[in-house]
Amino acid sequence: MRASSARQPVTTADRSGLSGRDRLPSLTGLRFWAALLVVLYHLSRQVGEIPGLSQATWYGRSGVTFFFVLSGFVLAWTYDGQRVPAKVFLWRRFARIWPLLAVTSAASVAVWIAIGKEVSTKAVLATLLMVHAWSPDTVVQKGANPAAWSLSDEAWFYLIFPLLMMLPLLRTGRGRLWVMVTMSVALVGLWFASALIETGATRVWLLDYFPPTRMLQFVIGVAAGLAVKRGRTSPVGLPTAIGLVVLWHLALVPWHRAVPDSLWYSPYSASQLLSAPIFALLVCAAAQADLRGSRTGLGGTWAVRLGHWSFAWYLVHEIVIRSLLARYGRTESLVTTAGFWLLAIVISLAVAGMAYQWVEHPLERLLRRAGPQARKSPAPGDQDPAGVGAGGPHAATSGPGTPR
Image (tube, rainbow, N blue to C red; front, side):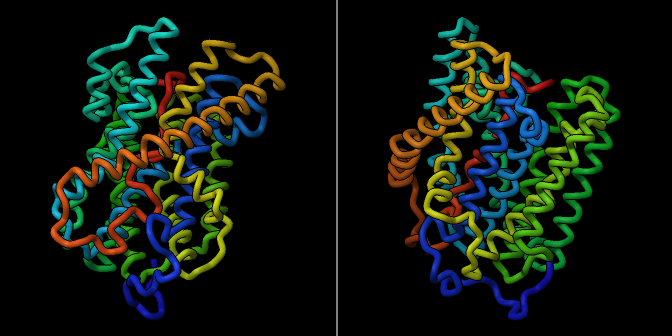
């Protein structure tokens, strides 16, 4: 990151053209694209492949990494300089994610029962308590709603976030750069260290689900959010950042052909661990474009609306796919596969829109009013500028078809 010419932190006056939940509309729009990446990942692996598109999104579960980085960025950007008690912050996070988690978990369990699959009570309770990602047991990880594992990681991030904001190291530009570089190197080190783990299932759990591992990506986002808030600029512009993300995912295609997912040096875990710095560049570049008032093509009316729906879409899409598979089975031709994909996307998006409008948004407001309040009215920056911190499409996910 390099300093802007003014070297001044971003202030409310600087954001006069951006207000409310969508002060950074491009970040809201990016949420939809990250969620779409996860949806296409599940469709490819669970339903059937569409040549070209499936290969490019075969490791689309990296969308979860994007949401972890984005969550750290937005929370740091939002709460930097705010005097909000930890209990108020944590209640707001609970109000943000738990109501929709509970409703979609109930829907998921209903579908499991309807298709004749046994449901683990222990797994359901672990999901509702948001502790299921701490278990190496794949039954517990899938819980009531397989997509919800990332919320267990997010719950951990929320618990440590107030402590992270107190670290002296994050108060200086050099310290934040050191944190981002160290966390990135640590992710590479963890990936290489996984060669020492013989059991594939244990390796997948430690690298892909275990909250302390994923926390490194969140911390990168926190450092990046503070850097942007305090006047630093990204070394690359938005077009370059988007290009890097696209090139990274395209590079995974030949890698996948050369190395099977069962081996530690396959792209499966690498695609999720090593993409965090690239996603951090994307988030920084998009946020700074919004703060400059630039048109990015990511913050239009429908882009923002779909971004608002992304958390619900993340939590319901696999349930819809599972239901359609139970009704129609796996597809056998390209035409039927494309039709299944289109039907699943349309239905799940429609359900997500209704869930946002009638469940997620109103229950969040209700719980926020009912819970502890800060002594003073929150400043304009005391809301998620991209509606994140939700772990999903946030936060995104592993469905029953995810290879172990």
